[in-house]
Length: 328
Image (cartoon, rainbow, N blue to C red):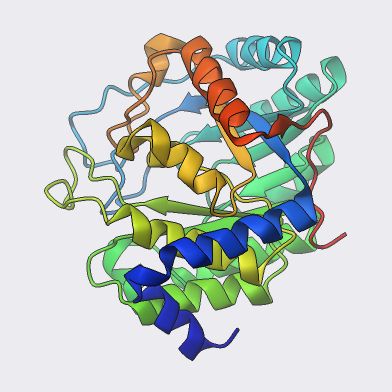
């Protein structure tokens, strides 16, 4: 699929149903009728970044900042493991004072105590830090490029470098992490050409996970007054991602829930095969406002909603760790 064809499909609202059906068939062909569940623990909402779309940006005075203790992180990972989850995702903002060694020790403790894979999503770091966490036992890393176009990236990430972001992703791949990337749909100034560049990057780069999220405006940010993009446009990007990178894991992101309960099911019918369930303690989860979430209200209710959705679609939960298959 070339750039011209991708742009045509992105701009054709009438193509949504057929494109999503093609992506659904491709997902079933490569991954079967299995959905992988990931438990996520958001251990800190501190961030030095000023990303225009993100509620955690350092300039946002509406956010009450928090840090979970490493003991709490391990306890929440244990709860998820006891509930049958085989992947634990540890996520934070771009924490200015992150205890790098402490995170490595926490990863090692989780790997020693529980039969799980560990994914990190904690932003940009030097290669040596990534190496230390990999040696501690981290299996995967999620670092969304957000925009393959340098100029678009620059307008949304003041003080950040597209080149450094790309360097981080290359380092993660070279160090043997199962590496995830992705984009945001609905950014101001974003065109079909920009989205096509994202999709072609997913085709060229051996990401093991690709995350497609709609822009959900967050209070206290420069983009807080915007509207989310049409859901059909998000689904077309998701479906095209599945078609150009059949082996990648693709989540039905929590941001999709803003469109209502059926949005998650529609994403699963458009190529998604991963769902994340929040295991952050409830009192902290309320402060992890990357965007305004339409959450069920608790881990338990989210699990119940997910189970109902999978039952409706005739899908089952994977029993293994759901490792990356694209590069392997």
